[in-house]
Length: 335
Image (tube, rainbow, N blue to C red; front, side, top):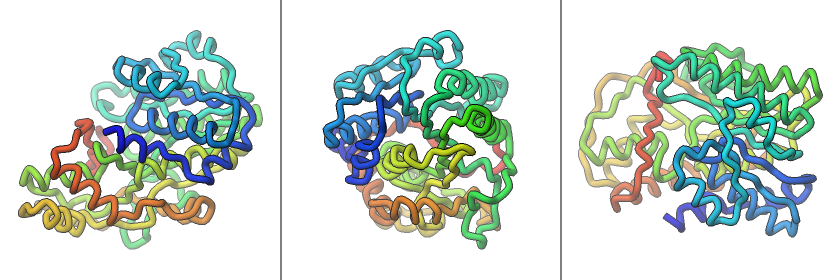
């Protein structure tokens, strides 16, 4: 586990250089989620390598005490803050650099009002507090809706056609930040992520565990994109330098358009398990074209095949799971 988190939080030379050029502290909002701890640690390690005296502050509700303990063990300053409480947000320390990671996806169905509040009201409070800061904002490729597979994925200039309350509220989140950017000149970078993969969660982990347990794999969502979480962390931090008004928008994922069928067959061979399928591939899927990001930041360090092999080895050895399935196969937008 320690080795995995070292890998996920290892800053590239480009991240070190990007943070060397930033002025002031960095605050990570929603730092206790799946990606937050290693992103915050990557930022801190980069600042240390750059010889900077600035610090990283990790803010979250910290509903799980273990996540706060982990961050503090890494010598990160933590602040407990309910981002849905406007007064608590207002009391956060000023920081000229912000990475915004807060959001709600799973459990949307039946809690639509909370989903909208989390994904739009929280951004409004944050924009009010940090209107003078530079902000790197996590969004999702789900804002595009389904796109024909033969197109190779949605691009940043495509119209947003969200399906369901989650995706619609994520468009709302982007619009709140865009409004703040256009009104107050707040530099913002919007990162449409699709999908990050740790060895403990992600689309590849979902598929690997289904294969390992000899459960049938649904082919209806026939293709997907993914990116090693460490590479996504690096892009999010480097994107701070590209934040602008109006916002800079970029898709964040790997270059490969991956077939659920072919990936599952490879996982079956690696895990030495038979693979069975149900359904057939639809002509469209939630897919992103990240060519813009690759031109700006380079290709991910971890290619898809290497990541597939890492995941298979982890699952085969009984590695820990976060038990947070992506539900990437959901096509109607209800999570």
